Amino acid sequence: MTPDQPAPPTRRHFYYLTMIYGLSSLMAAVLSVPAFMYLFLPPRAKKREQWVDAADLTQLPTGTPQEVTFRINKVDGWKVSSEKTTAWVVKTADNQAVAFAPQCTHLGCAYHWDDSAKHFLCPCHTSAFAIDGRVLSGPAPRPLDRYEVRIAGNELQIGPLAPHA
Image (cartoon, rainbow, N blue to C red; front, top):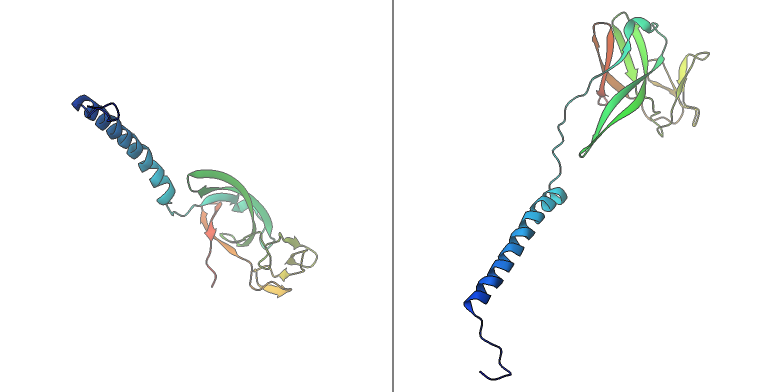
């Protein structure tokens, strides 16, 4: 063996390098599998209807819209947050009610009930809606969005937004 030639690898040196590379590969695989799953496999959201208790029907006057506040859980990936929201509820009979989403269908502004004119009014762009949600005037392209509702005893429960007809 001359001084400019490296020493031939020994068996011990070969096993040492094999073990280092093998353990490094194993650690890389163990760390990359969860990272791959996080980045490339979206969480499977369980699509289930959420119904929340919104109001006591015995406390709502018949034929007069009332703004009702309730809490709903929103799921965004792994994050679940409780959000306070409102709906305009019109009690139409003893055991019937309609709940409208609180946004105008033109640009999503908040509207209110104008008691003197007996209609919903969007102050931003002057859209007006009847008590049943139909468009009376203004730039709004469609009636007010409605929530699905159901009655459980005297309790009004609000569900998801109903699909447009």
